Amino acid sequence: MKVEVQSKKLVQPSAPTPNQSRKLGLSFIDDLLFSKHAGIVYYYRARESTHEIHTLQRLHRLEESLSETLALFYPLAGRYVEEGLFIDCNDQGAEVIQAKVDGTLDQLLQGDLDRDLFNSLSKFPLPAANNPLVVVQVNSFNCGGLAISLRFSHKIGDMYTMAMFMNSWATACRSGIQEVVPPNFELPSLFPVKEPALIQWPTLPFRKKFALARLKFSGQALSRLKAASNASNSSDSIANNSQRSRVEIVSALICKALIIIDRATKGLLMPFVYSTSINLRERVQLKMPTNACGNFFAHITTPLAVEETEPSFNGILNLIGDAHRNAKLKYAAIADAGALCSAVTDSLRDYVGVLGRDGANVILITSWCRFPLYDSDFGWGKPDSVNNASPPLRSVGLVDSPADGGIDAWITLNQDEMALFKQDPDIVACTS
Image (cartoon, rainbow, N blue to C red; front, side):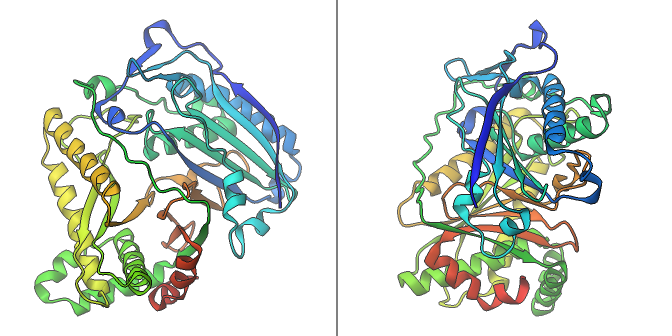
């Protein structure tokens, strides 16, 4: 199966950005982050309702509604000015790529996943400075299905921002731009950069030969594990353990499997570190505007002090659950911008510190669960699947399953690790 790029162009906002809004400073969190692009891909199978709509008509409507949406999300059509730490909202536009795939969507999503093929559905953009901050690639399949990928620079927003953008674009395409709730870009004025951040991001160990897998953790299996974990703990800890989330349970299962694999293949009791992020909206006491776009999250980084040769699931679950609970309590107690700045900066420094530390085995798990990713209906139904477009790096992306309350885990490991991971008895018992 091949992906052939048919066209590239810049799509500009349908209306010019007012002069008073043409320069958007960075928030202190924007400044802390690297400017590389993150990505997400939405998959839409062909439906009977779309057979009468020619693919070219859908592509034209996608482009037209994107232009209208960019007029509201005007910073996304601008350019990042690295020297001045601001976004020049100059309406240069987002890059849009149209591509044709010589196969069907079911061929892509069923069976073993071809990492190189998935990567070709989502172009990795050039560095953010002076280049498009947003790149959209619309891939059309022989069956009439579509895969719409979105790549965005972390300088302009987090996953909350991009989910809001995608849902707004879908609403504009389906029902008209008048139905879109306008976004808010006040975070930089509420939490400005007081002095430039001095965080040196390490060079990540990207490798070419990585395998990709999607494992579906069913809601029933996760409920069973939660109940079993409650029963095996003492009465003193049941109250805490009963609050364990689906994300914590899946994260614990994955961490346990990876720890066992590393100990079996490397023969060393290496220190393990669990790392994820937490959306801070509605978690702090600070006043926040509705639909606040930008970056507003922190990292959770905690050691997994597992001494046994065979680590226990409950032990890892408690470590991860406690880290999540402590982070939520910490940020809930923050009532001023200065304290928030210090806490978030410390969380980023901890994260960067473990990424650059020799001898530490970092397990990176990104959760996009509870984000409204399946609400992006462009007029031909909600997406059948969604995944993060991960770099060639050992990592895990979690998204809600479209049904049954489960979680889809998109996992990137080297080929030898992936073979062992798929054979782990706990992973086999909980996934399909």
